Length: 134
Image 1 (cartoon, rainbow, N blue to C red):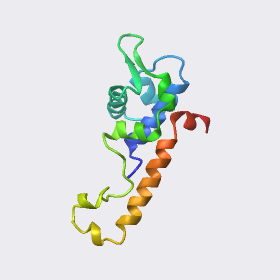
Image 2 (tube, helix red, strand yellow):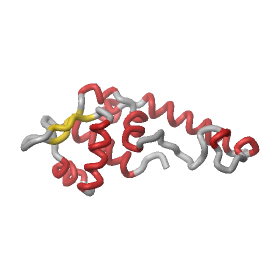
Image 3 (cartoon, rainbow, N blue to C red):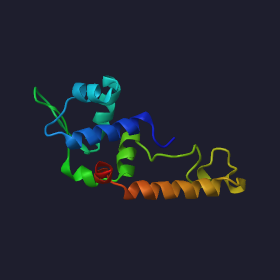
C-alpha cells in the first residue's frame, strides 16, 4: 500500500512544522494531530535521521523543518519514512525479483510496473511546498 499511516503522519507533521514559528516537541505534535506519541516519535526520528527535519534537545527543544525540505519530493520523504520505495501493489519491481518466478508469463505485471512508474514520477515531481500551497 502506498500511503501507510506512517507516511500520512509524516506528511501531516511536516505541514504543521512548516507552519510553526518555533520547534515543536513530540507531545505538542501528538496532541495537535491526535497521533500516538510513541508512533509519532519513531516517525520524527526517521525524518531527523534523513535530515528532513532538525532535532533540538533541551527545555525549548523539539523538531523544526529545514528550509530546504520544502523542495524535497514527496517520494523522497515517503522513502525516508518507510525505509524503502513505496509500492502501490504487492508486486515485484522487476521480473527477475518476482517471488513466484512467473512474472514473464504474468499478464498483469507489465501494467502494474508501468502504473508504479507513473506514480513514482508523479510523487517525485510533487514537493512539500506544493502540498502547502494546496
